Length: 110
Length: 114
Image (cartoon, rainbow over all chains, first blue to last red; front, side, top):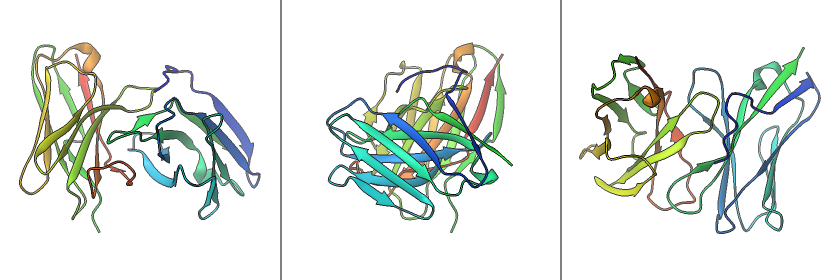
């Protein structure tokens, strides 16, 4: 996974707005992708997944889009709430292990 | 239902010591994976175990070892600790070995090496 050290990219949004978090993955053989949310001091929490035979998948307030041509994933969060503030990681699963991206910090302004 | 549990929550060790971290997977899950997460980075894969056998190993030195027990719980052992081993150690469980299944993470063990 890409290492960005302590300087995570940050997305700051207003409460109630929609958020879009982007991720570039590296392995064209990856056929399964997961978005995780990680709050400070906690383990990653599963949000939504998508398989490579799909372009879009929707959950409750979240949508994941997959563009295999350019190896790009995005996570859309509708009506962002203060509780959505966290670091978000995409992970790809080319085999048995997960390979994580560098993460994006989402900050929600009240 | 109980999620993935890990113990201890926090641990402070001195350089050169060894440490054992423990993980209990979600009931019914047979696969356990270990990850190391350094502050500000995404988790890095260390090991995967399935049915008590090692099924995958990441790019970590031989000081790191693990095992899985008949009840599918797992231990991660780290010998000759270095300052750089300070990290959050995460355990994840999954129902099956093959990729393409959700992996659920525990809260982690925060290891500090002084």
